[in-house]
Image (spheres, rainbow, N blue to C red):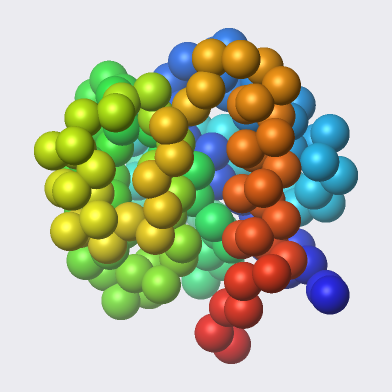
Length: 146
């Protein structure tokens, strides 16, 4: 099975969770470049090639987006809503990766087009295992449209 080597976009405001996620992806031997955005506003600029990222080719979309919900400036729900409302980005798999377990947030995310909702475990070994399973499924098993 061949892995799509487009970038993984990690949208996470917690530096600790971002480091942990990046480490877990690397230990799962993910070859894709990992791009980290610290808030929803920065992520939208990156995805849609605006602001500080206006020179980026917005046709080069991430292979997957790991999206936290609770972030400053623009929250994950708003980022998800924007991604899924635009033709160029609506097919990018968005995995909500958050500490929230609120049923209302799970429902809201799926109604807006989230592809998966994963609650971050507090145990490092479980965290690492979940990231490995996410990366295996979304980068190797899942078949993307061409």
